[in-house]
Image (tube, helix red, strand yellow):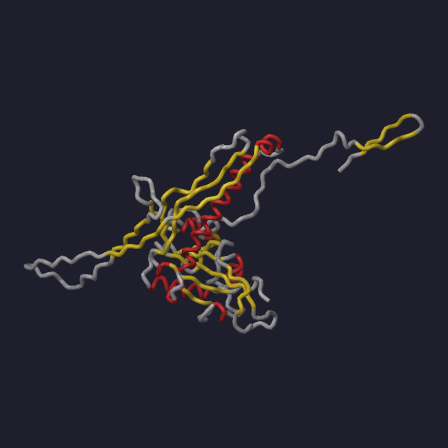
Length: 338
């Protein structure tokens, strides 16, 4: 915006523009586009591929699961030895693939910019790395389609049969807890502790769950965090019915589903359907060949004017114990329903 000044002289006052000396001021603080906090990558149980040598394309990580022995309920005989039994195991393998992205800045940009381009470049690449890994990991959570591990709303049969009343409810959460406990699924065991299962839901779904009131309804994180052995998860919002709830907009959203007949006359029959993830121990495995890391690329042009920076990872995700993951598909009262 041009500024004006006034001076007195001669027969009167004259106003003029200082456009030659007044320049636009820029805020040098680096701001990034809003993105979800990574959640799904953190919930995968990691195992490194072939420690001791460089990983090769096509390498896999093997997760070994030993079968439980039959309970010994017969009393021993004092004068007789027992017969030993063999141990059995199964293995689940997860293959690794390469992932990455890079940007290039130029010498004139870095020399003339009013902000720290290198710092901005690193921030953008780091954010992209976290977001990409989380979505790659989520794909492994989404891949399990077995009927025993999925609930469609309040006992519906498919995504396109979920009506507008099937929002995430305390009854659904309690039933899912019963499903996991009935399968003897241990609590999630990670760096944050193993005192409960973990649930990941979209904020729209948690909005509906939190609207339920009463003595057995939603409890805020501040009401229970002091009793935990370790800190809260990133994005953790509360404990409810045996689950530590985390909100994430990275939860799968299947937009504009033609769902069941509307119960409410205020909406039609097209809804956004959300996936809610309920996780126990060892649900998803993460194979690590090369940890995700920032990579400063080589300057290869003749005049050394182009500066690449990117991220790279050699990783993979896959189901280890399908019974440790249960998914509940619901709609939301605040979703894009029509």
